[in-house]
Image (cartoon, rainbow, N blue to C red; front, side, top):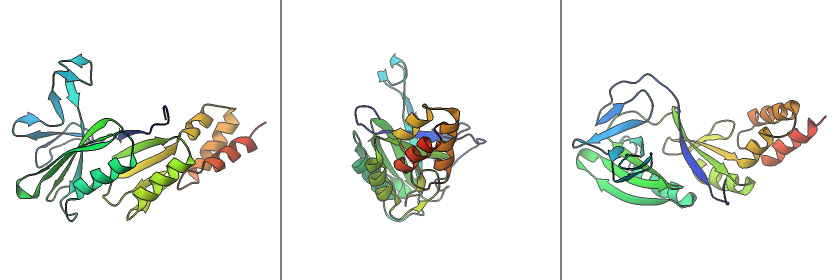
Length: 212
């Protein structure tokens, strides 16, 4: 956290790239460039870019929801996420031909575009949203809201009802992992590995118990 604000990022995991339907071009990652009408909707040239100032490329991250999910799930997902995380907004909803819906939104100031289209792959663990929370109350709030209709995993991970994976992590975990002795840090890691949702008091108890 910084100044009590939540930070959200998309964590990517390597996989073998290939071709994807409906305008997605795999670049060897589970983040793809979405090509629509000959222009890049995810990576496009703008007058002022996030990567290196004026004239540089402007980068947005694209996520996909399978059209097998009912209704306008992409819009519902974006609205839920933006209601939970500060400095977030749904910027546009575009209903296109053949059941395609594109939703542009921001989470903690980071731009995303969600695409819902018939067929295609479901979201998977190749990428996840990672949120660093300022305290246990923030962890509990986000965990409860995102878990509704979803499923728990382990070590602070859950999958929401739209199929996306989240890591809900208290900043205290990182503080403890940068403090104390090797034995204390190892104790915190062991405690974390046994958790489903992060428990700050449990991490702190493990840290103190391992004090020489």
